[in-house]
Image 1: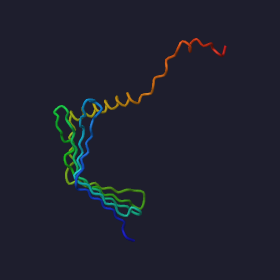
Image 2: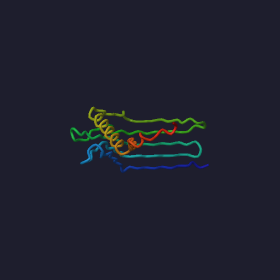
Image 3: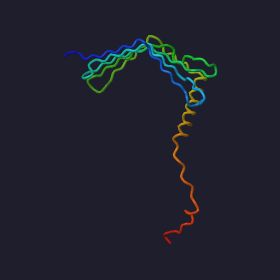
Image 4: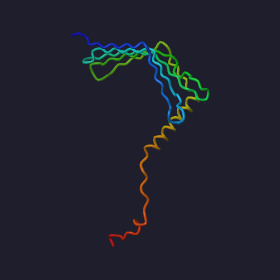
Length: 148
């Protein structure tokens, strides 16, 4: 039987910005910028013993509000992932990178993320809290006890 194949190539790049519009109402603040320079996906024999090959080249920057500049969090990095099913339930997966993954986690980044999570939690609580129960009235307390 002929091998099933699906190949997807994307080389024009994609940029995804995560914007914080919760903590500062009068203006929005950028948080993260994910840049995918290239992406490839190959699928083979998905109805029998599937094989997958995926490749991407990416970087991630975070916005330092104190300095008002973008700073690298994930230095430019390329990775390839290959996987295949065995005849049983096991999945074999291999990750290959030509360079080390450099993560830059700074105090400014941690403070920004903690502040943002706190603000989002408070905003969610304000907009999704259950209504408070109605206070007891004098009429409720002066009702005769029905069991006596």
